[in-house]
Length: 190
Image 1 (spheres, rainbow, N blue to C red):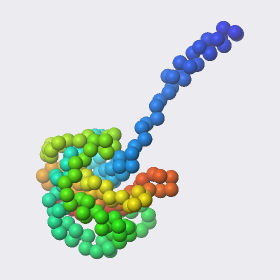
Image 2 (cartoon, rainbow, N blue to C red):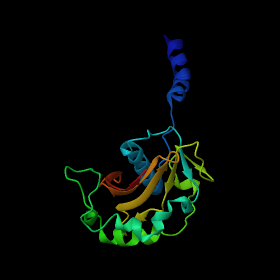
Image 3 (cartoon, one colour):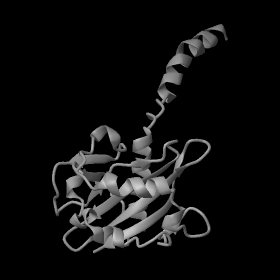
Image 4 (tube, rainbow, N blue to C red):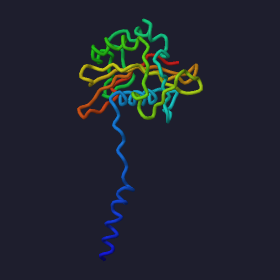
């Protein structure tokens, strides 16, 4: 009986190591926002399912040219522009997004921005240029409210010459500090 206890004591630390799994690394706020936005883009896009690895274009200069034109913002004519989806029972409108975000966002996405690998979620990989053989995603910088509790980001999926779509995704942080998609505002589909 005594030898069993000694044996058990010797093997217990090794058994604990065998079952030990390190906790996943905590994602940064930017990674969390991009991850949720990418997920909702693929969930709501009718033509493309979410790939295991998401290829992200390195630079936002590859965003569709109309994003820099007045035409894009004419797609959101006023504060009554309806979201395609919402986290609440009622569909949000563009006017439900905080004014500071609505004002800041067009200026933020209107110039070229380099996307950094460290800002992407773990399932995303940067690619240097557009490749029509892969499904790829373009991302804008993220606009945050001053308290970092709400955010807007533009995403576009490119899945060939005749396939794709772009949305503005509105996200909110809950009291526990977790991000969720509050609404998506579709801008274009091909």
